[in-house]
Image (cartoon, rainbow, N blue to C red; front, side):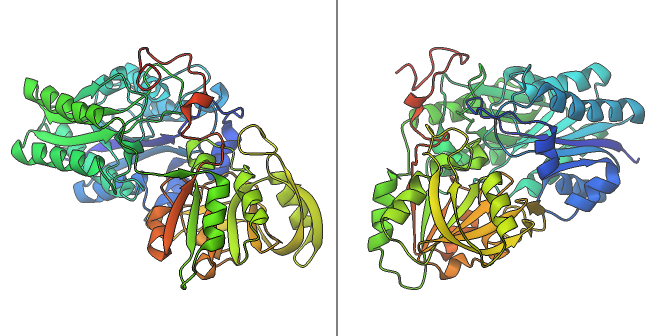
Length: 492
């Protein structure tokens, strides 16, 4: 029997403290593909969830019904217009394609819209108003899973890696379980557990404890009982001031057995016991720059990650505190990026390669988070349209664009100035613009953890700093009004 499976991707990680909302144009700047031809041209053979569902379709002989693939860079709340547009493409596609035998979704799990705190829950609620066929779903490891959402899907498979390198594989896994549900081989349901925590599992890092032990225990649970189909350990996303914020565990299992809930609760108890574990040592920018100044370069660079100005967590990407510290320290043979400043990028592109100019750089969105604009003089080294085909572990084969982009050399630092907000996750984001980070003494980049997949192997040393930008780990800088209380560590 050939099953008809509707697919949709709608992904956004929402930082509710960000001043800037996420409109439809923000999705257009990253990925907004409508219908099969557009979706396949953008995402086929890439390390993405949609490609994973294509793999499952090939294995099981499905007829895929494509609706939309939408992704925007993390920032503030998704506007109602954008949310309704994308959800409308999904629900209209379902209504027009009936009957279907199953639905395969790629969601983030931490999307907040102007109207809906649990935006993904609203997506699935609307689908359930139309059909009750099995639904499988992938989530980011940093999902804020709501109980209502977990109760509306049949199969839930979050990423198992951070840096995220298993998007395609996890969708393939979800698709395999959907196939078994559609044939009647299994009757899956999702068991859910959480504690009163804002954040946990060391932000979800899967290269260190406690996640290593947590995932090992989850694998033992699965190996010990064939009815346990999948286990997801979700670290949550603490920059969301919503009721359902925080880490959780979901167990997708065949049937209804109290033991499945016990497994979820057991893993969640381990997360609670490790609630104070933090592996990163957060330097201030002066300390980071001083380490770089004294760094004994032996052929591999020192990598400085500006954790707080990570666009992948909804920060603005225009913080200047680290750049200023690097300039004050007199660093040379260094690169810095990507600095999000569309006005400066436009001015530098207009000036052209070889031009010398002085201009205000960065710090324009909210100087209280990350520092004010810097008036800097330097030379335009290169300009481009910012289009890059990634080849690293995270999104190999995927095309992304920084928009109009310039390399601006000031002092001994090559600054990558971009128009589209995006964190550094791939070497090509520098290489495509004439900067080889492997040959630099210091590589400063705006990312929390994803950079490690591509940059840690080529680095002599990695250090992490807190520039005071919007993704700062210092939670005392934020006022939470909508989270459930009490909540650790806000209520110790």
